[in-house]
Amino acid sequence: MAEKQNKMRYSKRSLSAQAMGKIDPKTKGVVPPIHIATTFIRDPDNGYSSGFVYGRPDNETVREAEAVISMWEEAEASLLFSSGMAAATSVFLALKPGDHVVAPKVMYWALRNWLMTDAKHWGLEVSFVDMTNIESIRAGLKPGRTKLVWVETPSNPLWSLTDIETAAEWAHAVDAKLAVDSTVATPVFTQPLKLGADVVMHAGTKALNGHSDVVAGVLATSDISPFWNRIVSNRKNLGAVLGPFEAFLLMRGMRTLDLRVREASKTALDLAERFSTHPFIEEVLYPGLATHPQHALALKQMKGGFGHMLSIRVKGGEQAAIDTAASVGLWKRATSLGGVESLLEHRASIEGPDTPCPPDLLRLSAGIEDVEDLFADLDQALSKAHK
Ligand SMILES: *Cc1c(COP(=O)(O)O)cnc(C)c1O
Image (tube, rainbow, N blue to C red; front, side, top):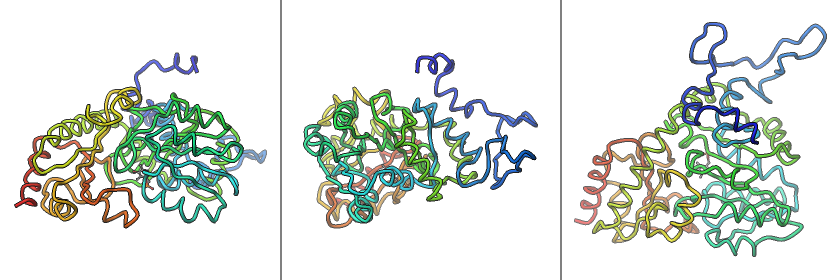
């Protein structure tokens, strides 16, 4: 580890801006070529001296993007998947039928749904616990049977936090792995592996790519363990590798990751503070606010910013929230998050009846537009909805 740090002479921001300094060796172009071949020439002695055999297990452009992610997460290895869901499910499918998992009550909706339905066919037993209270994680563990604790922090769409360091201690005490969905924190603000997590997951679709034009998933590990090798095998055999064009776009997006997420996070904090005293807003949910119940943990765990995601609870209930969303101009009414364009969404309509999401909640993903424009646009929409 120390040796790895000595080798890292430049900051993460610098290394990311230059995609680890990769160039085209033939032309000396400052952008490496996209490697699209699906098959590779075998040596006369029957070997594969290049290390590449076929396009499903591996790809050079994918590896180059993975190197950028490993640098950000200070990981031993990273894997890129065809989506965030492909990455996440590959972790659960590395468990064995009969294994027990502890997962959060409030988490990314599609994954929660999968854990409640299809994961059962694989024989996994899942306990959903309140992860804002670290005691409930401990109470949810079944020593000998729990093989994985899944954490999402900050968690969608209430932006509550889980203490990664303590969760790792307790997971490891029963010989379980800790995996963290760190999509919203981004590697700029939190490095879960350094806090004791075994695996970190990102929807590359979101802030890592940042331009709403790639679907991708990421896993990074602190240790090439048998568990990690089962994940590697899942990606290969389930055929969930990212395509080279997407890997190239993701790598391009990550050149500006540091700039984008710091700016969007500043905007999110500014908006959260201003909306806290807005006459048509009941409550603002954002870990950067001093009034957030877990602000102390946010300060400890998130370094340099609290992320680009916040939610507002609109006075007047569900209809007022939907009417507000209907009246925005600059904000775009759409699902997803982490792009340079600001998005807003009435989450409860998407998540359905058993959601923990309050009906008056609008989820906001701050982009990089002018914060004054973003404030004014939402302010006029709130006024219109309360006419
Ligand atoms: C979007 C998202 C995912 C899933 O990623 P996809 O690329 O859509 O499959 C998982 N976790 C979080 C927190 C997300 O925002």
